[in-house]
Amino acid sequence: MVAGTGPLVEVRDLTIRYGGRAALSGVSLEVRRNEIFGIIGPAGSGKTSFLRALNRMDEFTSGMEIEGRVTFDGRDVRNLRNLYALRRRIGVVFPLPVGLPLTVYENVALSPRLSGVRNKADLDVIVERCLRRAALWDEVKDRLGALGSLLSGGQQQRLTIARALSQDPQLLLLDEFSIAVDPVTTMRIEDVLKDLRDELTIVLVTNLVQQARRLADRTAFFLSGECVEIAPTEDLFTGGTRDARTRDYVEGRFG
Amino acid sequence: MSSMFQRTALNARNEQRERMVRAVFGLMTVLLVLPVLIILGLLVLRGGPALSIEFLFSEPEKGMTAGGILPALVGTIWLVAVSLVASVPIGIAAALYLSEYAKDNWLTRAINLAIINLAGVPSIVHALFGVGAFVLFFGFGTSILAASLTLAVMALPVVIVATRESLQAVPMAFREACWNMGATRWQTIRKVVLPNSISGILTGIILEVSRTAGETAPIMFTGAAFFLPFLPNTVMDQTMALSLHLYVVTTQVPNVPEHLPYGVALVLILIVLILNATSIAFRTWLRGRKKW
Image (cartoon, rainbow over all chains, first blue to last red; front, side, top):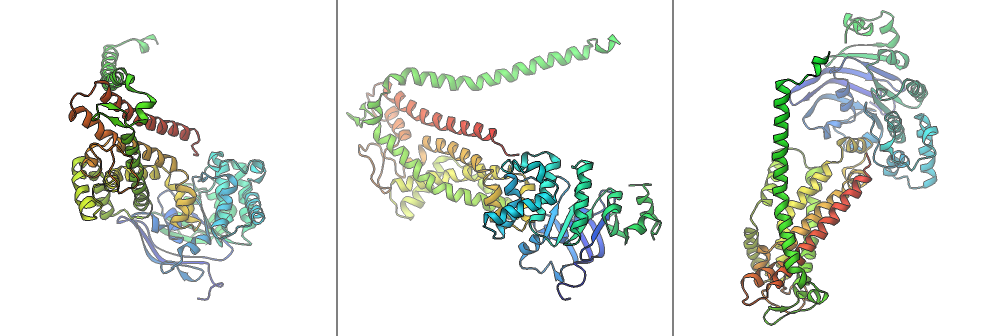
């Protein structure tokens, strides 16, 4: 497959085990360019493990074994020599915010610095743009020198999002990003995500089915390590489900 | 409703037990502190009169029954400094490898176990190793270099363990956040891990210095001299050392006035106390500026 066309992420028969216990079994799906791909499912359904396979986090997760094929932009991530380049192109946001013990400014400037941006003026532009996009700029613009790890939980999460955006990623992985964020801010970030669709691709793992409905173009339903169903999001909510379990979950009958 | 707060037999028994346990733990603490206070008090009372600028900065006289301790004091500083130069870079590098690079497998676990065991090896065994390895095999002879390297080998496991603990106190989430940005392990260490553990590492090293300063056995056969009223010029020279000097004037030399060994002991223990106080102050300051 030629890079630049076709789906951004292609997953075939992905099985993930932690010390023999399967967390994900035989999942195949593709994430198209510039879509928001939602993944919903109850706790323990393998959503997070799926994300961890995309940027090869197994490399630093002891006991995590991956089988199957994952390609990013047409390249098999198992055979990539330059994992650093892969990870720079994939931004990751986890449920619990991680404000690095650096200043707010340095939290966002770190990734550009690591990839060689030295010019202060360039960094200033990147930092402001990313903080604005993460709906945090107005709150921190006067204290960019404060420690990022001492911001409130919701602010730290937006800082984490700003940091992920500072990598200028092609793919953004969001794992229940709104758990530590208040509803108003969540809405503001959701608006940003809708705009970002023009520039990048987003995989949104969420346990708020309504959030998936608001944002995702297509949504996958994971259950006990299986991908039960993938469909255009609206179909899932308007009775277009093929599997009864999906309908039950979406309508809140279990999970 | 009042019955809810009435004192039952069970309450009474628990309270009694609580008082007893508290008393026993308190007594143990007193037992722990008492010897330290007695030793310090005795040293200050008996050694205090010996202390003077002259005592610190003059050479021993009359077969070590009079005069000062300058060569021993300078010798101890040499020994500690050279051993630090050897043990700190090696120890920190090894701890960084074990904590930040090595995979968690049986080999790593075996190495960690070996390091902990190494810390438990008696100092006289280290001394004999030092004679065999540094004095004879590498041909350094009895010298500051051989003695310091022996001390360094002894200090290494402690430096490694202290460093590793400080490194692992940095939350894993910080590392993952960095790695997920495409940072290499070294970039992550430099930007996030070391800045947040360096103070703890330094604290561990200062404590290790205070221990090294008091060691006698490892330097006895490897470079410390019985009596040598000259200051060392190079690391290939022999030297006197406070700890050995104390041993010598206490047990080997007749007719030493009583205040002299107490004075030597007081100087040695003051050095250790000052170093420990520095490390405690450092740690307090560090807690004040914790970043998460």
